[in-house]
Image (cartoon, rainbow, N blue to C red; front, side):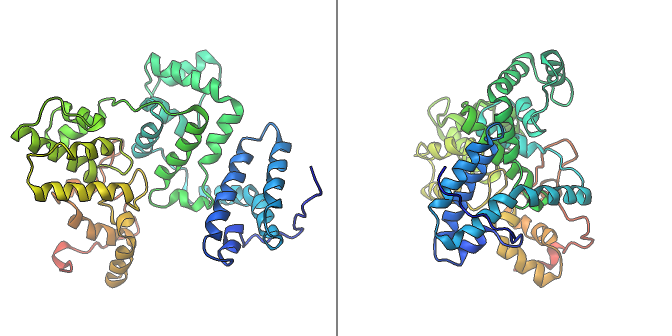
Length: 377
């Protein structure tokens, strides 16, 4: 290594490098966040060779203006020393987070692994008690992995190794641990862990385990062949009038009713071009949905119909006007985004089932929800 880069003796815990960079000019904050992301990835994969991380961080620091160095090193050195104690405090206040079905779905969509493997990874990459014990764990409740999935999971653990496992687990923790308990926190965890997993092991093409076919049949009564068409972009047969209507329904379902990041969206966009027999107005509407699906601000795993994510400023406006919390304001707005507003589709399902509602949770402190009869025009 070259001459040492000075590390501040008195880190400013209240500042971060990205905060400092924000004051330096347009685009500087974005570059700072990219740089810190590289540092954290390097840190996560350097547990067995810490000198490599030090070398990499020093190399990055040498490319920075001198005025940036104190904030850079404060953030790098103080990263885990501040996040971990804060995480433990929040755990004491809120309790552990459950692994949601939405998070499991997002991880398997992003990586292509079977559902039991996704659940095992999101539960903390459980196992390592020996092959026999791990196989028994995979086959038991709540994972219920078949022999193929259990064997696959153990093989993937072997390929990951201790360093890879730490890298995937490290990706779970956000910059601010409080974000874990925020709306969408668990699906954001799944997205970060899936990215780290894919960087190390690659991505397997997603194969439907029957869940898409079951959901489409429950929501619209369409046969499983339309779930296959959505995932492949190709209908099972040429589209007649009935087929065109069914295809339009399936496309709308994939683009407007499913979580962002659902693999059915890609095939749905391709199917639109085949709807030559559909009215022009319908095709225009579907293309608008397709365009929105490519640019949506809604994070992966969340729903377009969830106002907390799709129109957060409007939620704040309604909450202020009605004097209620953001969750109540979002629930007040949500019926306007549903094609079939009903209590069944506007509230969370029972424990253990995927939420049918785009609203992920309600604030238990909210005791009064505005009635639809008093809704603004």
